[in-house]
Structure formats: C-alpha cells, structure tokens
Length: 365
Image (cartoon, rainbow, N blue to C red; front, top):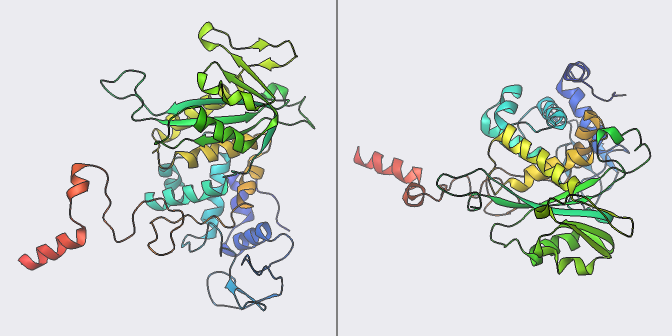
C-alpha cells in the first residue's frame, strides 16, 4: 500500500521508478478498480493487454477500447516520465505563492516550453467552476497588471479585471484554526472578466448569480455603484464606504459588513503574480486565478492533500499546446503547429511564414 507523500525526499524514496509512479496514479484515478474511461461505456470488465509499451494497457471487453492510466486525462499523450509529473504536482501543490515555469524547468531538467505547458496542464486540474455559495458572501474586483510609462494610475489598457466571490467562513486566519475545527473555512471563486466586457453591474451580477443562490445569500460589497442594482436580487445587501475610511460596519441585524476577506485574497494573489511570475498574460490569467483558488480553498490541508486533490480532478482536462485544426478544444497557443504566430506587432503581422522564407532562399541558390 502506498503511503501519502511528504517532503520531496520522502517522495523520491517512496516512488523510485516509473512503475511505482504508475501504480500511484492508477490508485488515485481508480480507487475502486479500473474501468473503461469512455463516458458512454464505463465498464469494469477490462483486462490487461500485456503490452510492451511504456505504460500498462488495458482493453475493455464491452467496447474494445484500449487505454492506459493517462488516457482521457490531462496527461494524455505526454512524453514526460510519470515521475516528473509526480514531482511537478508536489512542487506546485506545496508552493504557496506559485512556481514559475523557469523554476519548474530547472527542477525537472526539462525545457522552458515543456515546463510552461506542464504547469498549465496541472493548473487545469485545479479548476472548479461549479461552486455555488450561500450565506454571507463578499464580492470585490481588482485589476492585474503593472504600470505603464507616461500613463497615470487610472490607465487600464494593459490590465485585466478580476472579480472574486468569497463565501465567508467561521475562520479566515491562522489564529482561528483552533476554533475552526469542525467549522467551515471561507471559500473563493475568482473570475477573470473578458477584456471586451465592461466592468459594470450586468457583467459582475451575472457572475454573482452563477456562483451564488441569491435568495439564500447576504451580499457584502464596497460602495461601488455597479452593485446598486445587483444587490436587489439578494436576500440582503450591505456595503461599506472605503472612501470615507470605513472598512467594517456593524449592522442593526447583527451582520458585520466588510470586504476584508476579499481584500486579503487579492493581496495574496497579487503577491503571487508580482513576486513569482512578474507578468501574466490576459489569455492565461484565469488559469493562475484557478490555481490560487485551489490552494486558498484547501489551505487548511497539508501539501500532500492539495496535490492529491488536483490529481483526483485530472480526468477530462485535456490542454494542448498548439491549437488543433480538426477537433478544436482548449489550447495554450492560439495557432496551429504549422502556422506562423501573429504577435500583434508590425513585424508579426506582415512577416511571411518560415517555410515560405526557406523556400525563397533555396530558390535563389
């Protein structure tokens, strides 16, 4: 029986080779026994093919589908050893402020692009867009992005708007952890707003209604006017006026109105972006927010549980590096493998594909 992993030394001692790591992923994916991963089958009548391939292969007697432990998961088609996947999960799960792609590449002795792709695939397993909150909920928004020269503080052309929805719990700090035994910690659902959308009541309200039960929710916000009409659909709506240096207000009905939990969440998230990644693109900002949500929502657990919670969610999360021309799906880069990237610059917009340039040079010779 495999023991839970602890430090990186214990991890390497416990999983010394590929077979041990493969058994670990098999137990985590199929704790009740191996079954067919096809959604329209899911039969447990499978047998070992005794294939000479790198990974153990099974075949379903019902639909004749062949599969391995990586089939239909975020690891599908990977050429990296499973041992490096295990270390990467452990490193990202234990890094409280995240880990950069360059640091991950040095840890695993792989290239920068494979490390970048690996990190985003692991972040995809940390995503949970199905959370539905009730009770006391805080909502706040912020802008991610650095300052631009010759522009004032209010310039937002290089920034992305982020909204977080916090389900307030009985314990929000480490000082409360002894009191929180058996109680609920606060939970977060962060949404990166579309750059083409305006940060207004319609956009923010739609996200709030998606992740809350309005008639069972007490909404806490600041004095921003975008919440005036949004708050009417909730059971109660309380605000604090930050412009008047008001950060906490005791209401007559007993509720404590503040958005300090959401402000603290954004403080930690911005430290991750500024201190570890230094810059994140608008295209992938949601993935970094989902990683931070995952660690925030599991912060009362140890590093092993944080990593294993992501591993348990790896099925059906395929993230390709290049855009697929045929099947589509989620991809990190917005162009196919044989296409020339357009970076939005004059050079990128008018430059010819590399194959055409090589053919022209060959013709001249």
